[in-house]
Length: 188
Ligand SMILES: Cc1ncc(COP(=O)(O)O)c(C=O)c1O
Image (tube, rainbow, N blue to C red):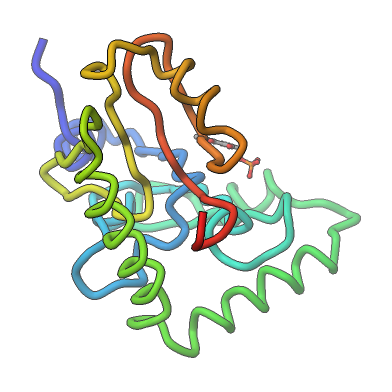
């Protein structure tokens, strides 16, 4: 079976008048770098993307955004489905604050994090036995580091166990890869 990329999936969905909805929980930052971040779901043809704004941008935990594009989706219907008689103004205000923060420097706000992440990646690549993944037609998000440890003869879980005191891994597997999303401080 042929593996389809997001643009091809969007074309296929749209040919049947089906909206493409993407869980882009970890992608709220994807619009905000001139060249080094992959294209966002909407830019790859999705009709709806749901982003956990709180994960990568600066809003409060639990606050998210639903983004719409194109003409297939009935906006009014979506808004009605998501209505609440008791919205949290605290969460709404934090979303607005995150939007305002990004809006001040949309093209440059992620320059430093991307630079630091690439520096970290280059350092990790020099560690014997560690493989760092670089792939995808749309580019790899430099803020996510996917590392293979198979050359060390240990599983992702074992590597995670060794590293977890210093590095927060978002995802480990029983075989050989895991994600490093955040480290607790630059020195660690
Ligand atoms: C792929 C994916 N989708 C959805 C969620 C849930 O996001 P939230 O915690 O903002 O509801 C997560 C949380 O980690 C996730 O990783």
